Length: 182
Image (cartoon, rainbow, N blue to C red; front, side):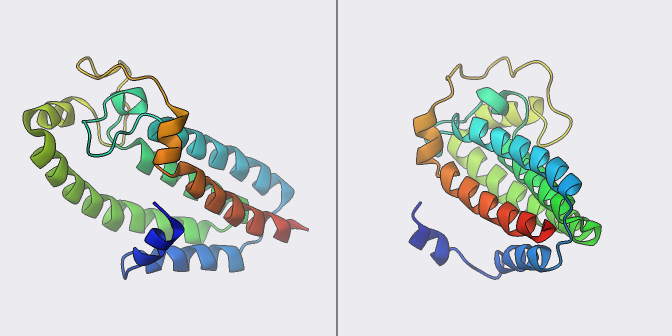
């Protein structure tokens, strides 16, 4: 997806996300300690997203390898971990509470409903079995999904899924928060 494609996807559903980011940066009150701990979470969340996108074969097959063998939505979990890290870095618990409420009460249910419908249409019984055996978000399945694919992680897939662009945006937001510590 190009930057132009991303700009076209700006809708009334994405504007609140961008507004939250702007508010988070403006009202950030970071310290070196909060930046350190926030960065650890941001790195962990981005690592999970890189791992997931290296396995994700959108619209080709039901992805059940890598982190998808343990949870259905590693990208959303990674995003939540990143957002938590940014809020810790910014030392803004109010924004984190608002973000968590929006994430779990609005964003996830809407995405889950839309995604499950699409995956069920595309993959039928294969998806229904996966959905029954692998948790959506928490707690992760300890043993990998036994009927899953055995694909290896691919850097090329990570690039194809444009995770590098997401990482750049996350790094920019973290930088804008971090510089306020000085």
